[in-house]
Length: 460
Image 1: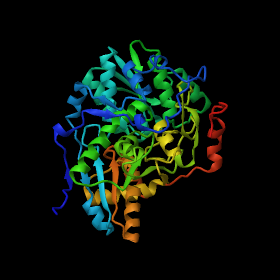
Image 2: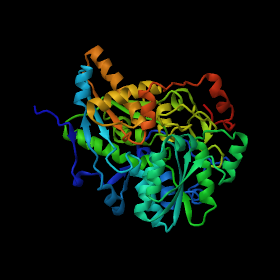
Image 3: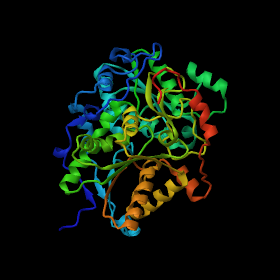
Image 4: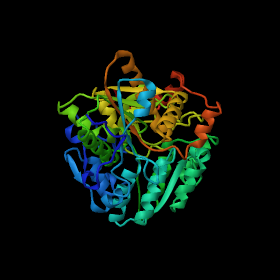
């Protein structure tokens, strides 16, 4: 049998022409979002002041299994997709494992990550609706970078509220967003009412994605012909990211392979949800039984230590409420947290699948162990991985070593969500041995849980 190539690249003709909506095959649907004013299930039309109408329709659709990808989006995708499916032969050899390790590499585009898959879609729908501008938030900067690129392509103005800790740690992320024409503001800021209120309570706050979301939504709702877009968590985003898993599955079919274990880093759930979607479909329909593992940072452990409850998606408490695994909308990761994945909650789809046992495991990993894996992977596989992606690498290595102990020949698949070239301050901290780990205590987490909305009959 011929050796499987290090990289499999599908042809342009083999690229999926539809997104897959995982909710269409879920046995039970995620609980509905709630209107923050009435605490009643929100209707599609109530989302129109915040989201583009087509995106609001995608957000609420639980029945349409496949959505055609519009040609203008496919035209942009073709600049960097299909993305390669890779075999980590050098890592396998180094670990001396019988396991086969595959990864889907999403870093071959200017933004450097999978985020462009949804950024292009959201910018397209905004332009289609005739909008002139959009707003968003960004944490580590990958989403802001991707959206600035997409908005530049479609001719939209963009304002990005960037979490203050990342704004200060990652000046080159800010610079590339500005290169594509985005206005980048450190969050919380004095440019919005909610930002000023947060600063009044804590002038020295390092910010959070929840803070930045609140500011971005306020900016969008007070700016004519403008809407808000989000890079993770939402159903619509997981829909767009399903192209990752669809390409991966097609590639593995060509190689006559199928994963025993599927691993994804988990912050808000976009990459994990996209990678696992078609394999989760197999599980839901009884066709196969892959083992799914979500990997999150120990300093922001929404799945492993959070509560499955209704919560606001933002710190200012202006968004619809979603039932998800959450640490509380006011949770702010420790300032030493450099590995990304800093959102307080998890996608309602991912949360529901985890709660119902279809997503098998969630693991939390300290950032020093994440960067151990990142540097080893870089030296062996010649790709500098993003810190976020390296959470998945860490657990892929752990699983491969477990196969070495047991002698099992398992096929491991993980998502390499992007590159780490704008994260060198974090790498320098690791290499200079100034990086420290922080794991919040139960006492640290309790205020967030105490602040969860009290909605009778909705909390588990």
